[in-house]
Length: 274
Image 1 (cartoon, rainbow, N blue to C red):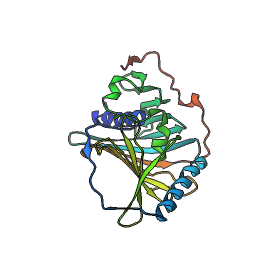
Image 2: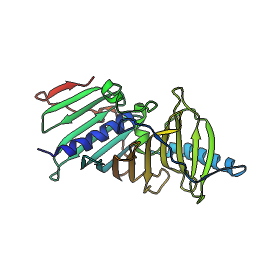
Image 3: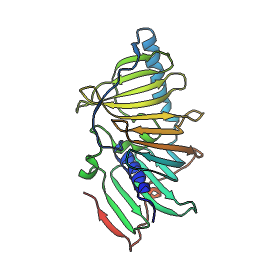
Image 4: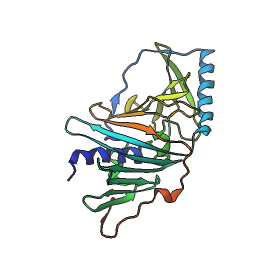
């Protein structure tokens, strides 16, 4: 029987791809970074570079697959699991965890609305809508499970965005871009690299200035659509982390909705999550 830490690790991925966060939302104050307000004409130049990045997202393939090593760490538990990931815009995700012998033992699939989580060893299938009470306990408001693909590739989902402030870090290598708050009072801050045209960090902040979650993106690939090789998700108190090491495969993959379906064995116990 697999160590329970592996299940915590895999469930961490489940919460991340379904809701955009791994841990219960316990707000913590956003630390005061060393920043300066970006003035004109630098501000306009940075916003134009950011718009080029957004426009360049059309160069990103709608489908990706990758080999993934997933590691979960906390004060009480830790674990690691490797497997294969498939993703398709805007919300389709499938992850298969495999043993050292290449045998699948845990599977997750979601279309951004419904999910299936299969524990092969226990012959159980957990399924239900992503917007259940179970998952809402773990996810801060404002995350959009219907855009799970964009969280994984370190991009922003389509839609109207209003930039409020632009601040620069002291090294002038990266710049923070703040967006107008949504109806629930939350807003995003992204750390933007204007040279590589990538997002290095994405924070979700509430109306009181408290950070709810933070996602780091690093080790980006080359090409027209740089993809993050490392994704680090921090809980609000920074005592729990989820790390994904991604090895992206060829980007000319072509999937459809049926590729994200999982044949459920009739002998498995099916448990509906509320």
